[in-house]
Image (cartoon, rainbow, N blue to C red; front, side, top):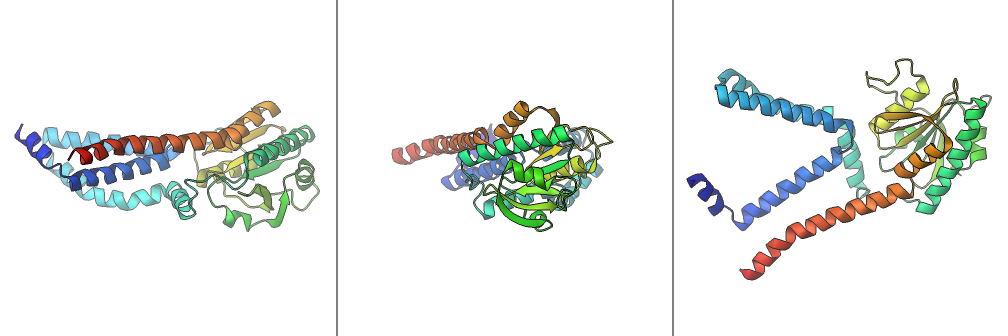
Length: 289
């Protein structure tokens, strides 16, 4: 009871501000990792630490307690290494204020891009011509764009069909569509997936590359299999296969098109509204004081 009274007496304006800042920081960290593979890994680490600390307190395990206390320093160093892709993505977004802004291309342009990609992939699938198309969102892809041949051209189905024609010099690589909605480069080299739990152990290089770029960035990657003609989409380290044109259009709309843009805007409006409501009681208290 005395401890509770002490805590209440200690809630000065400075302490409340301190708590608010820490809460915002934790909210920002969870927002960065939300929807990624790192979120599950972080939850697993927190659960293990809570169980071990609880066992230390209940059974008074001194050796384990010493190990956990000193191991937190090692964990603090290991976290940036384990979550490197997510931290890199967050810093890139903050650096160019992209965390609050949508891509430069408008909703109408994105819908047209989706239409051209679906049209091209349908023809490529029929012809059994392999293809790899990357759609940039917030993460920087300059290092991968620079590995290909610079084009800076509008996204047209006919151009994509020409690029991925098997007898052209540019077909063996990825087409990267940048944030402005233009084809930045073709024949670009992408990183292969580092995951050991692939959906299909016999997955080809194109699909591994699609998973790889989606693991190190928030980009979306469309793949057309040269062997089967099947269309797949990779996003966030996961891949959805066996897509028909209509389903492909729906998924791209949700991940890249107007639906994605509206969802982002609604999400930030919700965040700002929550922050406004959270700060409102403190203003009322100040007026009463």
